[in-house]
Every structure is written in structure tokens, then in C-alpha cells.
Image (cartoon, rainbow, N blue to C red; front, side):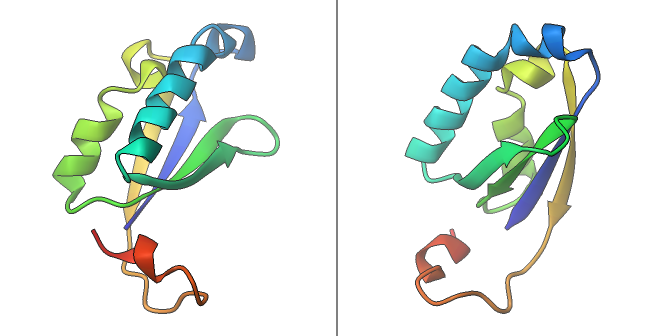
Length: 96
């Protein structure tokens, strides 16, 4: 599993121009089973995505399609981890 930390590199008015395309990107990856949850950081300096992927290379391919990255309004930090404990009912989200 992966935690994706997005950090905005441009002011919010510029980021906001790309939000509709970013939401389409999120929807596509939820439908594909790649994303488990996501949301804006508080304060709004970026976002967080919990991603399920087989490899870091797969994650890099996935994030390369994000309008935020394509248009240079955010950068990504990728953190890989192995979920060794989790709440009941979450099992189906753990392995891909």
C-alpha cells in the first residue's frame, strides 16, 4: 500500500483551475480499485491519497495522469508501507 502526499506548488487560485480534472482522475482510480480514500489537508496545502498498487512503478504510472502533476500545481511524495494491523472489514482493501 501507499500513502501519496500531495503538496501544492502554486497558489490556491491556480490549483483550483485544475480541481475538476483532478476529481475526474480520482474517480477513474476509485473505479479501477486503485484508491481507498483521499482528501484535502487541513490547512489546504495539498492532499492525501491512500493507494493500493502492486509496485511503486505502478503508482508512478497512476500519478503521471493527475492534472495537478501534469500542470505543475502539486508535487507527490510516495510512501510505501505494509499494513500489518487494520480494522475489521478493511481486509478487501489491503492487498492488490
